Image 1 (tube, rainbow, N blue to C red):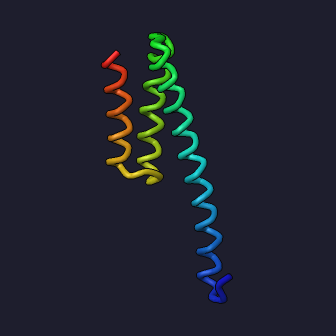
Image 2 (tube, one colour):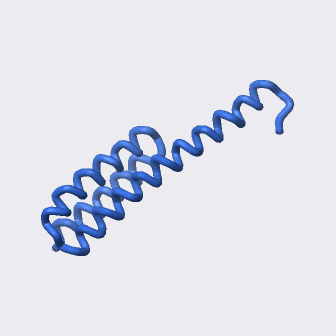
Length: 86
């Protein structure tokens, strides 16, 4: 534990941000997984609901800085390619 007051505060804020980022990334991955399952099942209704939600969640994570914008573009592209391939 640091002795300097500002560094003590940084330790606390870094931990809070880490937890918030983990929660956001976990939520994004859950939406991606649901979209993947819908794509694998080839269920048009589920795809229509899950894919836009997953793309939106990826954009949200990138906007918050949880993932890099290029990583977001790569994830979105992969989902969209998979949806049009089937």
